[in-house]
Length: 129
Image 1 (cartoon, rainbow, N blue to C red):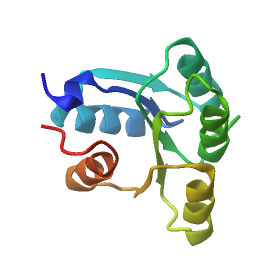
Image 2 (cartoon, helix red, strand yellow):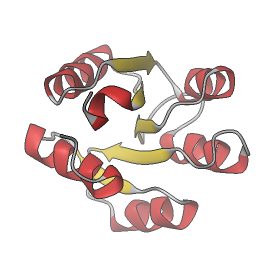
Image 3 (cartoon, one colour):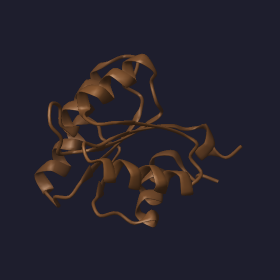
């Protein structure tokens, strides 16, 4: 069993298309345990009920944005060790710095390529295969 098959991934994005693209890319990289949420609040509920190893979250979402979710994940003893990758369409340096301060493991710019996603995940977990 590869490392990717063992990692439980939570995708949090308010756009259905983005969730599908992320899920498809993760599946192609060998991930099998993928859950999706439509906003940060739903994502945090899922994390509280069933902690995942990796959260890939969009930054800009209604209700609770990606940084709010990151903060909530880091403040919860049951989820604080989860790896967290923020997705953003904005190449905003301040956002990247804020994400790093809050404990994000990586930031991935949209639109992403499979190679960039794989590199972002491997930077956190090491080689997937």
